Length: 210
Image (cartoon, rainbow, N blue to C red):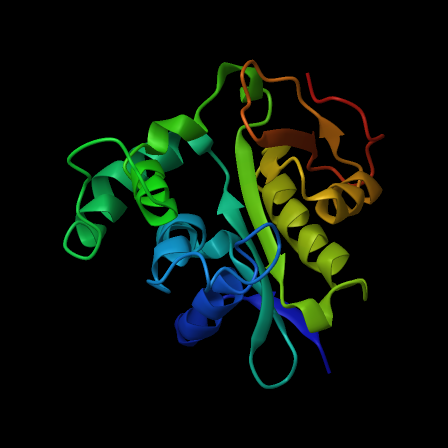
């Protein structure tokens, strides 16, 4: 039986595997990033480390096959990422000595710029999230169940709204988020990313939080 449950430390390997297998526009990233700990060390593990109470997994009865994770306060998370997470990463992923020239170096550059997560246009949506499921478990309602668990946890803590960033070309993901009531948030110079947001109260109309 597939269920949504809180993250446990023994889910770590599955968390990393899910991230790697969904990190390239929703698909497998192993042919892009040779170090299989790179993408999880940016987009999954720091959340489970810094805010495990907001990390939930989809368990198929054997292992985690999907997750949703994030932060209740993006500003505070960026600060904690720099002060508490980056020191743990510096040996495996040293800071670059110049501009990035490869896909992996581009990601390492992102790792060392956590303040990039803090945008003035997103201030009304203080929380943010990442959600990923292995392909075999997509389009079965599991993504909605994970999202509901995360939204309810935020709402229970008094967080009014949440945002996420998605690669604009990932149209299946956009369809998924639209179905869940997310709306686009205009951001100046968003690059290849589209920002979406919604209220954490699942009973509220799907309108802007501000």
